Amino acid sequence: MPATAKLSSKFQIALPKVIRDGLRWGAGQEVMLIPRGKGVLLMPVPQLDDLSGLAQGAHREGHRDRDDRY
Image 1 (cartoon, one colour):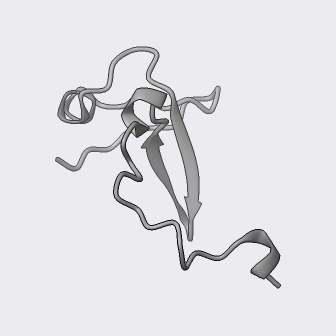
Image 2 (cartoon, rainbow, N blue to C red):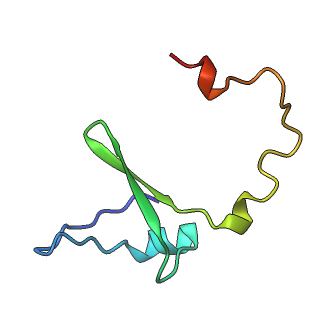
Image 3 (spheres, rainbow, N blue to C red):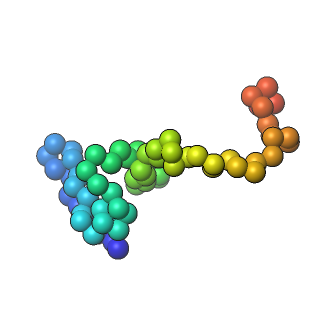
């Protein structure tokens, strides 16, 4: 599903329809831009409901606490 887009004079980019449809992104979708080398990774900002149960079954023992860091 590769596609290209151009940066406008106002530094805006319109995502091609094939990308929006493939990712099921709609108007108002909040995204984060993460610099990666010479490029940028575009990721959707997760909703709080999407994170529910993410750490289910995680073990509380054996983790590093802030006091254990350098």
